[in-house]
Amino acid sequence: MASKTLEGRSTATAEAPFTLDEPAPRTLGLLDQLGLWGNLGVSILGFTGAFYILLPTGYPPALSLGAALLALLFGTIVGTAAVALVAVAGTETGQPTMVLLRGLLGARLSWLPTVLNVTQLIGWTTFELVTISTAMHQITPGIDRWVYVVAGGVITTVLALRPLGWIRVLRRYVTVLVVIALGYLAVQLLRNPLPSLGHGSWHGFWIAVDTVIAAAVSFAPMAADYSRHSNSVRNGALGTFVGYSVTQIACYGIGLVALLTVAKSGDQTQMFNAFMAVPVGTLAFAVLAVRELDQSFVDTYSSAISIQNIRPRWDRRVLALLLGTLATVFALVLTVSAYENFLVLLGAVFVPLLGVLVVDYFVVSRRAWDLSETARTRWLILLPWLAGFVVYQLINPGYVVWWQTMWLHIDSWVGFTPATWMSASILSFLVAALVTLPVGVLEKRLAAGAQPARAR
Image 1 (cartoon, rainbow, N blue to C red):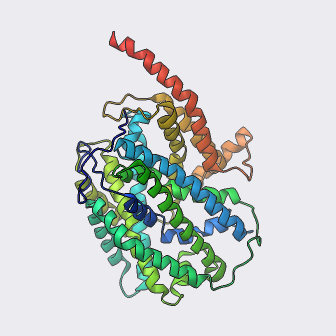
Image 2: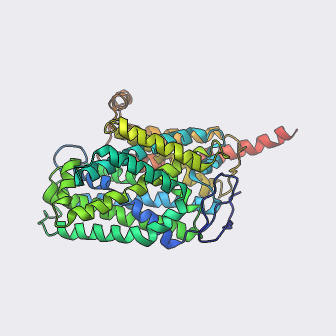
Image 3: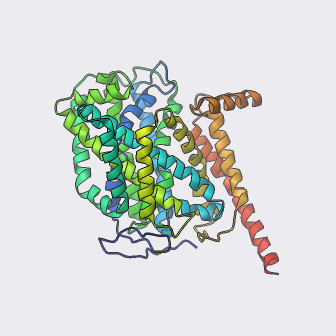
């Protein structure tokens, strides 16, 4: 049964428990959640990601500024609202996201999305370290990039050891610097003339919306990892929604302005140079590059407690040390540019799963989930998840070549041609959610009918 009370240690200095056997301290208020999620909504990857909003199909014509801004606003609100619902469940239960999936799928079956989540989080930690080191090397080319990789990996790992303490530091100090840096870059870039809102196309609008939703929903598998420490459901949900949505809109919006004025290309190097060309822009950009460490830190910490869903009594500090070291080594030796497409594909797995989770937790099960290590396996719940995933791939199979080719053949075989208005994220979420209603009710009735038989 999901607990409605917010139990646990309340001292301001309490840290996250080392194992899942210990209660989660409820020390994070609204400002803490706003600071955390406000920082997570900002990313120097978001600046270059704006290219995929402005040119969603990868080739001309580009979206008009009005269409791009609407896609950004709509996609952010929809995606972040879904993430905030996971935050509600995390606050009510006091459990991290992967443990929540015990209630949805059963303890053993929840290991499947857990492994996928750990895989993508290690990948994103690696990707963040590469991005940070690339940005800092561009600012100070006299220092080898590997130095920044190692430094970033060490700092990331240290922060993951004391996550709640670092979140409080974010709220008090880092957030202020980030807001100043974003505001300064925005003002400087907006001095350049922009095209009219209607100049351009609406072709690929829903692909752009999918891109934005995917950026927000990528945080759903870790939302409860932090909301479980919130001191109220309201603060957890509001901090997640407002903090992330405002800064993601600002970050991608600045990227759009840069593309339409000075950058002229989505190439990472050109985009970074465009920011540094602004007066005192190098300093503002350096603040945002260093701030990127909060992305790698939450990825590492969430990887550790995701593993605890499988091994609840393993110490998260030891796991964080191992995972931080692994990501650092990967960032030093791997070429990760092509790996980004694989990470996006993994992220698409969680969009329909999010739809299943929301409907089953709030509607079918009415917040009554068994989150124990012996939670029964709910095989039928795989059906709505699979249905949503298939819908997503039929509409948008991503950019991994062999995977994309396979789904294009399936599209042809079933005679399906995606319409331009179809959003893979929204439709896969809705299909998964709608199928969950009858399947969830049937699964509960079958489980209730099987209990007396087992008792005999």
